[in-house]
Image (cartoon, rainbow, N blue to C red; front, side, top):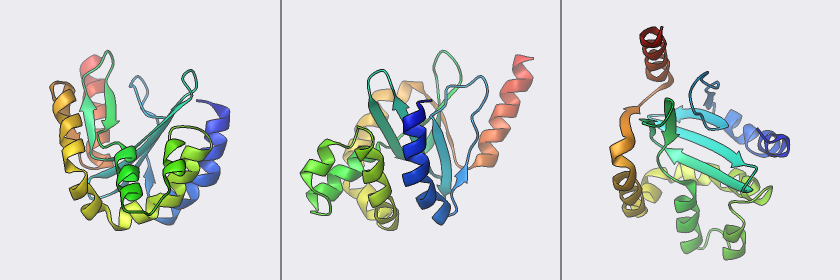
Length: 166
């Protein structure tokens, strides 16, 4: 994990997640994981990763799925950028802020600034972006294995996977 990204994430987003009592999910050994994965509540997950080679920030907020890949993998299906685009359309954030959403440190700062608002209006925002969510889900549906609704279910699947691989 990129050290600068980790430092910015811990400074900007961790306090927001701790403030809502999000549960951090530890890295799953032998699986492809996001850099950070949190369970929020009611099948709602938050993930954040940074690709240091392409200098690209990836933030997701939504449902967690097992994903078919070369190794077991988990992904959060809904892209946070869709929520940001909707907030921009509603005039809650400026277009110039939106342009920097995938870069450090601006993207992390933007997520930290908007996350509580997105969560408080999550149902309405999700309804507004449902077509984008459906497009992404349809595009990768053949690789989605099953939805994970809570950390206990995730750990149960990890244990099943460990037992069958031994």
